[in-house]
Image (cartoon, rainbow, N blue to C red; front, side, top):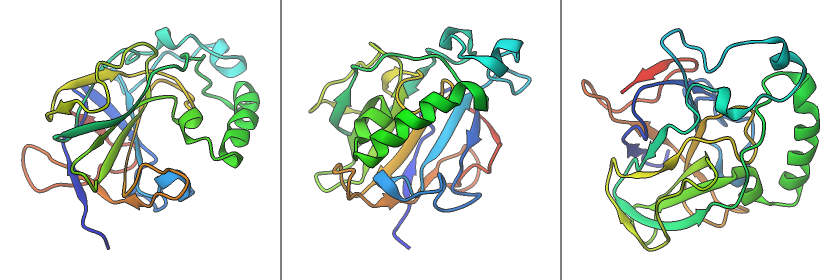
Length: 212
């Protein structure tokens, strides 16, 4: 297997790991767009909830501002150069259950068939560890929150944007992936792992709460 890309966690606070490659590979059920080893992190409160569950949760979209981590700082997980930035997509309503998700599923399926990774990713920042990569994408950022530009050098821990709900996102969260290319139509996903204060690098388990 390709050597793992070792990263720092790109946030502070409590975040729930979802669609983890520790559970299965490909982690999101597909290898399209370099997502083979990608992982999602959902900001949660001390009870492990991203937002209160209400009747509206079951029947319709919810304002992203109702969610605990909407607008939480997103940090560079590695030293590198910013190679791609996109910050033109709105934050849409969160859709945590099937009924409000139906229209979104159809729209995002069209984008996938058309190879429109940027539309699926929403607002995003991609950082290259070197001229040949690897390339690490931080995805679904809040509209208007991106703080970096292509060609800018960043260090681990530098803030690059805020957690949002743009693109193919059912609730405010961060999607992170590493690839061998930024041509996402053909990019290969690369395995990742995260540094922790004690012990070696690891991949958070499915539904593990990471606190940094």
